[in-house]
Length: 342
Image (cartoon, rainbow, N blue to C red; front, side, top):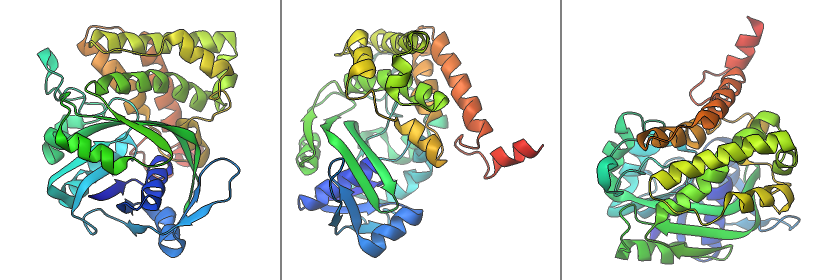
């Protein structure tokens, strides 16, 4: 099976490195200084904190179309980047190829295959006007939820912070032959891989945490534990998490991890010292996943009649901060400095 990792940053780069070392036929699609560093020197991969990086020989490309066709594209880019990538992904797919979307927040395919009154609905926050559904087609989509921590430490250098899990599932709940084939292809050291007929449960479990820790850590610019060991901040975080959970429950989804257990991990567990991906994006001046993490959760909540005032407030604050610093997706270059000079 030919595999493309589209968006080979922290998570995607880690996946590309692991798969290449496991002997898979994999191509990494990246851009800018990261792509140039990988082309010049290979991908440097730190398997765990403190380990010396190893050099991974890896075929790299600026577009998937130039290196295709692929049987499986794993899209590990930020959700707001997907519409601009759709044509390239479509051009790179083999006739029966599939795309596994390993993205944070609510995926664009959320209502495709769900059944009931919302079947086929568009999540406008992540797929404005249904462009992704039209250009790629929901039949191509495989859900993917990543539970491991990784970091792009420098151009050409990615690091994995501990082993984790990768969960795959068909949006329609079927345990299809292509799902089994994708799982076999992506099974590699560095994570445990499983498949499920209820991939939205995994999506919801992940977005329940993402909608809580990511915006607060980014707004306050502190690690998770600093937020959730402050009683006032922790109370606000708990409200965010419970609203996100209520949205999931209203759509018939199951959350395996109770809110209290997740909050305890944020206070005293291994995640307490972690700087979330959104905070790292703030640190490095990269566009923030504002809409996928918060606005999309509120949007699917409205469809189910669930009020989300705390999520709405967090979204308004994070978007204002992103716009004010030029980090809202689509903001013109130099927006922050121009605003400051006015």
